[in-house]
Image (tube, rainbow, N blue to C red; front, side, top):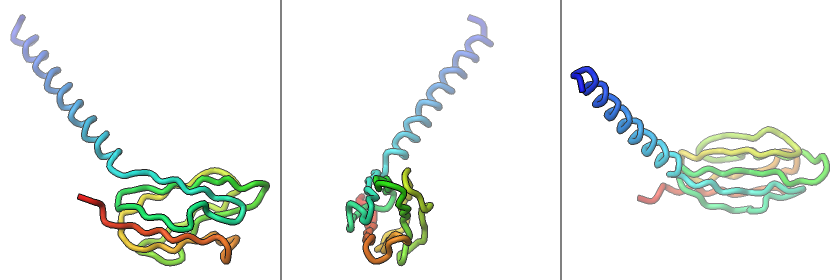
Length: 123
């Protein structure tokens, strides 16, 4: 094997190891937080109280019948967000700040409410 071929083989090995380490790090980072699912029904969220940790995601999935429009809107909490107003589909939010979030549907403010508690991630 020539010197250039050996250098090329070494470089290929180093690059492959580097890419494998990078992929493993990315996979670990992606699986760090959990995803919890909340159903959005005709006049309620299927969980009116949910506790998650910093780094977790909550996915709201619309199951409402007919053409009723719903959304997820933060009334109070460490950060503000809101989903599109829609009759079907899903919406996902990641949580980076601990605290208590009060959520409601702007179309049904009195009936569709939810409390989301985000705790510091366990060590």
